[in-house]
Image (tube, rainbow, N blue to C red; front, side):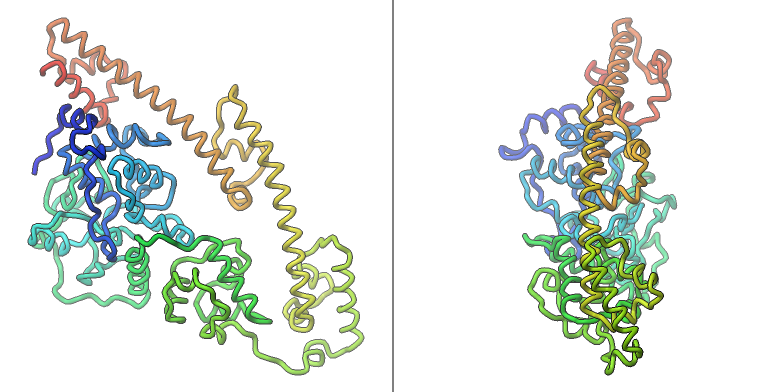
Amino acid sequence: MKIEYSHKNLLSIKANSFSKRSLLYSIEPLGKGTPFVESLTSYICRLAYNHNIFVSVLINEMIAPNLSSHSYLKGGNLISGSSLLSNGRTAINIIDTLEKLTMRGDLSALTLLNWSSILKTRFINPKKKWCPKCFNEQQEYYQDLYEPYIWQVKSIFHCPKHKILLEDLCPKCKRSIAHISNRMINGQCPFCYVSLGDVKLYNISNRPLFISSDNQRNINTYSYLLQNNFEGVFPTRHAVKNFFNVLSDSYNSISINKFSKELSFDRTQVMRWFDGSYRPPLDFWSKICGILGIPLKSILMEEQSRFKKLESMLEQKKATGIRKSIIADKEVYQQIENYLINYLKNGKLNFSFTALCKKINQDPSKIRRAFPKLSKLIISKYREQKDKEKEKFIKETELKVRKILNDKTKVPLSLNGVLEMFNVSYRVAKKYFPELCDEIVEYYKEFKSKKRKELIKENKEEIKKIILFLHQQGIYPSDSAIRKFHTKPTLFKNAYYREYRELIRKHLGY
């Protein structure tokens, strides 16, 4: 089907002639409730196809004007496809707008936003991947062509259905394809228009490829997330933190070293998961699910007093005669015990548990085993103190930054500019006040977006004036004539302005 761009298409959409309830067709997402649910970019392509307009027209003329935050035109390009499929603000804004325009309430399940508490960012491949056999089957059975979300996950290299490698280059022109582009149609190369489902163009072996256990575990885990993506309740970051708290509280003495070795993760990394400063990767959860034989939602959302199958990975070996084997000298033992008690009574904890042990020339692991209760108390008290200092730091910095943000007489600064002003590193800022960082970024984006929109408006007005001038002079407003009069002739390298130029000419009957 050839897509024709016309102003009437736009007017009919804006006039809400398609539906009494929604501005856009309320088309059903494909693959709901399965691991092969379609991606948001695929849905947008199908939506544009069903309305007989280009993807660029749908985004620029219908979606973008209704966004709460306008950062859709970056140098004239469309929204980044990988950001549409990720868990950031762009995806949230686009989904919110699309749900209003289509009167649907299930479009968030076309991304993994519902699982953002356990997923890190940048898990989407920068360019599109696809399975030729899946596209071919969709064509053979006269189904709507669509792209399952699971294809675009960076760590997945095989089609879960056909067990073949996913393709990432057009079989004809050998070019990589963006997740979304101006005239994109699902299952078709936007450059040479060849069908991506033509299996004759690929060198596909009939033998199923060997898939490693790690790759298969990735496929299984993401399949689970996507299959259970339409249910109403999802785990929060608090649930992740609670999981590690339950493990810590269930055992008197935990061996982080043993736990990390059993699961093949770095010890320092695992320690950060337990203290809540970092989130574990999805691979950790897939391993835990495999060990416990429990679905991820059950692990994170149901009450679990003890995880029995993890016991052998966590517990220290029980030792007898602790005082004799660890600290044989009773006098030294008593001195250390008194020192630890006095340190706690002092109130002001200037050292962490590890630093304190080094100060008295003792191994932290030995002190932890000899004085488990005192050690745990010092660690928890020190943590509480640091949390209070952190809270004070956040409040003071937030007040200073908000003062700058509220001063409308000054030009907004980027996040790096603000952090440089207060001599705070990006890493520290993201760790201690991530929400404020997001606010600064959003405020600066809105400022830049406003300036960009003003520039776009000025450029469009100049294009319109030139075309009207040529028309009134009886001169055909050709591309070369318009470029000759325009102050920025290179502007028309941008497809957005080329389409606008064509729209004005059509208005005048050309």
